[in-house]
Image 1 (cartoon, rainbow, N blue to C red):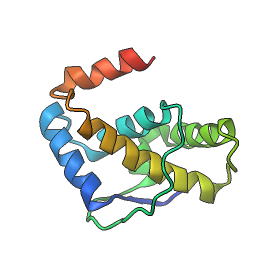
Image 2 (cartoon, rainbow, N blue to C red):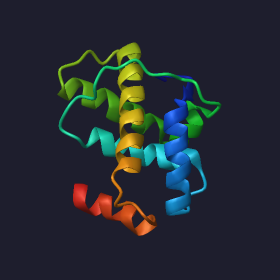
Image 3 (cartoon, rainbow, N blue to C red):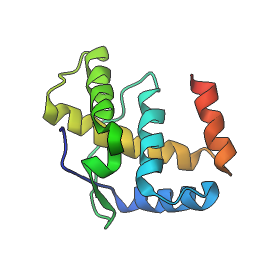
Length: 127
């Protein structure tokens, strides 16, 4: 397990709240999974910026990943290896956080996500 607790920035929490309203998805962890995968699909490395964990939105790694938590960890480590970045737990946890925050910002900032159908459309376009 690369991380025990996932805590987001207040900005990411606010962005997720808006996405929840637009998509009707009630669970934070589901939207966070979408955000992570959307960011991992990008061809570039997220900016290595300091991340604030200043919100009260916190979930365990198992809540984030559900029954597929091991797959999410493997995806992050595989991304690190593909980018020729060390894939140890500490580095993977760092890039997990960077991808999660970037993915949330991308999804909330696109302006084209107005419903669940728009979110599902991303899966078709990215595949």
